[in-house]
Structures are given as structure tokens and as C-alpha cells.
Length: 281
Image (cartoon, rainbow, N blue to C red):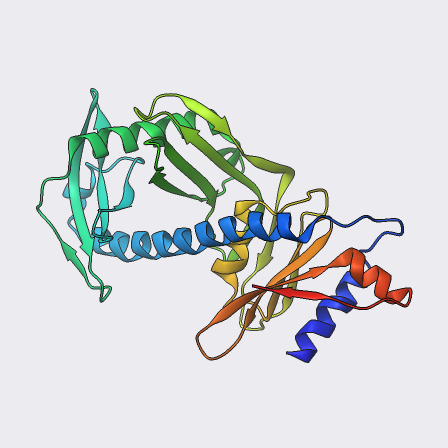
């Protein structure tokens, strides 16, 4: 633990700027906790999509021709995960495969009828989002993953992030985040972020420390937080650098992690003779 903390301070010492002011810790932590919760949910969604897509790949190729790009996962009111693969055409979603993942993470095919309102609105929201984001990922051959969830106010939240690429590169620097109207047809809020180019680290058999540079931002993006949580097992440490804070997911035991935040401006004060502070949650 001491080694990790000292490493973070050392790496930050090259990033700090004299005269830098601090962001209120309470505001930063409140923002991060919300994004951290979302990131954990998104990683679970990704796991469900991965497992169920493997089941789809095992099906005859003829039946897979009825699957479009608007497949998605959702949780029912009893928190059971569902994954739906099909196609939206002529104002209607037709299901090709429906899978359920139970509390023991067992995947089984279901023939239960899915509410058409869920099917149609979710599919339309994904289509609307992809129309908005354009062809940047396709133009550079970048694989993307999509995630969708209904908000408490019945609007739909869509996230589209770079996938773990087939060539073993973990990509960041661009993410598409939209709040969509309840019928799936209109973008109400666009919180997308693009650094001007996508960046990547190779995942190989030699785990290393890596840095995600978001130092132009006060708060981390949801895509940046997701990246740390998703890839934490593949690197020895991932340091998420924003303007005032450095954040990492610190392994506390064999299975658990906790978020560790360090105030970069307070590190600067420490170099001038003050005290070093770290913030856990």
C-alpha cells in the first residue's frame, strides 16, 4: 500500500503546476461516486453481453442473420439480467434470441415474451445515438461497445465506449454519452467527450503502470472511470489524471478494490513543506 501511494505521488510530482488551485474535495468525491457506481454497473452489463454473445455465436449462422446492431441488455424489476438480440425494422423489434442470466451467473435461453415497449424504445435509442455519433469509429476501424439503461424519469441513457480491441489494445480518449427521450427518438442531452484522437495501451503478459491523461478536465469522464474499473486486472496500476486529482483503483485483498484519490495541489503544497493528503472512498 505504501509503495503504491508513493508511486502515485512520484508520478504526480511531474504533473503539478505552480499556482494550481484545488477543487473542493466534497464536490469531486460526490461526482466520482456517481460515476463509480455507473462504471461498476456498466462493467457488469459488459460481462452479461460477453457471456450471452458467446451463446449467440454458438447458434446456427442462418438464425444469426436476423440480428442487427441494436441488440441490448436490461435488468428486470427483480434485478435479473436479460440480453436481447434481434433487429428493429418497420417500427418493430423482432427478437431472434433472448437470454436470462440468473443470480448464479448461469446463462440460459428464454422464450419468454419481452415487453414490446422495452424492445422498441431501447432499439430506437441505440439507433438514435449511433446516428448522432457519426462514423468516426468506423472510419478508423475501431470496435465499440454500447450500453443502455432506463432512467428513473423514463428517459434512456446510452453509453458507447471503445471495446477491448481484437489486437489486444485497450483504447480511451473518446466516448459517446446521450440522454434520449422516453420514446427513443430524440437526444435530450449530449455528454460525449473526444480528445481529438483515440489513445491506447497494449494488454500483454507484462502488466505495467499506465496513465490516462484527462488533465484538461476538473472531473473525470464516465468513460475514464469505466476504463480504470474494467482494465484494472490487466495492468499493475492505472492512474487517472484530471486537473486537480489523481485516482486509481487500489486492490485491498484477493478480490476487492477501493478507489484512491490524491489531491495534486496538496501534493504540491507538501513539496513546499506542507502535509500530504490522500482520500479514500
